[in-house]
Length: 494
Image (cartoon, rainbow, N blue to C red; front, side, top):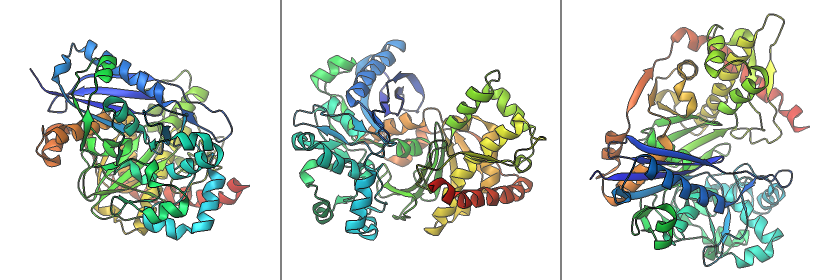
């Protein structure tokens, strides 16, 4: 009987569940959606119990479709979206919907606490700016606006930790997701009691910390009945979705870098020391003794999907990119700022707006599509430029791509040409759940270490080299993009 691993991804619009063999081949997978709620301006929340219901359905679906004997599932790994703040009571009951990563309801709290404690005081511990989308301001929001909920809360959990609790009954936190908590020292992997006290938060409100591949517990009888799995199956702590995707793309050594193009975009630079920058995101990697300097952008596949919906309803995605392919690099001066819902790194401006610049009667739909694709690339490379200020040499990076955009040769060639770096593309559609499964495999001893795990499971499907002529052309386009972004900042802020 073949031993298998189960990876669970708690995404923003759906959970993904996938079963892998030891070689990293997908045996079965399932996606199950759930709603996002927008009860007030700036509020974006989800019901964690709806995550759990969808995951139970997804696991059963996986087992049924591939006729998997649940005894074959030897370990379970979980990754999840960032910056959740899930209040649960002592019995593990969810007390309130969680604000998710897009939520900015704690904006005033974040500004006040930054003013009271000082940005440097917080940054020197957390390695991250005190922004409303992170976990800590949301915990304070519960304390200040929902005191009855805060009082009943036994622990605040991250997304993957909530699912880990539902599977095992154990409340945990992990070193990777904890970067959202600002009194967690991202350099040492421990809580800073003094800073927590200054913020007015008791350490009793947060769980014990585990390594991401540590076994936190074993599947309970109740969870086994709900999922169709076997009671006693080991479950590891897991981590951030972007970090698990980074591991699933084969990034687990210093200087390796993941570029992500799903609904949104981003990058994760793997470092062997905690380089931090206030405009970027610093987290511990899911692999021990490594850190990720990250940039998360709003632009990505979602921008192309919007364009198709509004202006290309008669075109398939392939037809749209074929139109873009006929246009020269640089889109003949058309530039797109992909700030479709504000922008995260490095602008951190919820009021930023998307812009097409350089349109004229001589421009076509193809120009707009190519500019859109290039703008998404520029938004990610903007983060690389900022990372250089933290001491990162972008020319030394070993780039790996993942997400839906990695399936587009045109889009990946743009990344290669703009960065001047070779892009390696692994089998990317399941990179995130694969990363979670790898954590389970290392945790239960199926793999001796992460070297063996990545060598066994991550397969490079193609490599795209930069074209020197295009690199020179894109230098001018990138300069124009950065200039537009900077010069429109005052207009955005109005």
